[in-house]
Figure 1 (tube, rainbow, N blue to C red):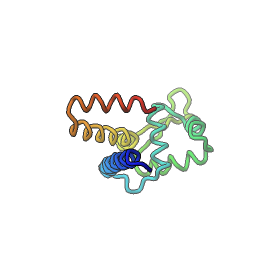
Figure 2 (figure 1 turned 120 degrees about the vertical axis):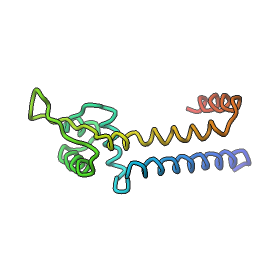
Figure 3 (figure 1 turned 30 degrees about the vertical axis):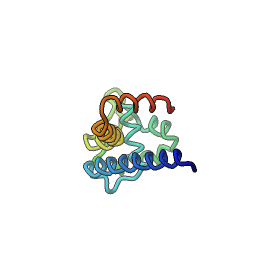
Length: 139
């Protein structure tokens, strides 16, 4: 590895460390000590969909309806989601996020916002513009 690659590697490692610190901080604020990555992924899907049924969630996550039911039951016990019957067809239940569930589902975005804030606070306007131009090139 040449010197430039090593510097880039170290800089990216530092950014990831900051991102992990911000994520830990947000997750701690959400009370995530008992949440699994899979549960958080389900909450993110529910958040993105807004209104989702058990069947639709199974389809979106590529899992079976019994697996979705088990996962949602855990999330209900953790006060992250609740079931709401469809007013037109009581056999259908929607899965909705509680405030806690919404906070957890959006935690990753909140962590990224904190990282961006820390970066912007450390840079002057010219450096910010340069950073944005460089990052747009990397896709």
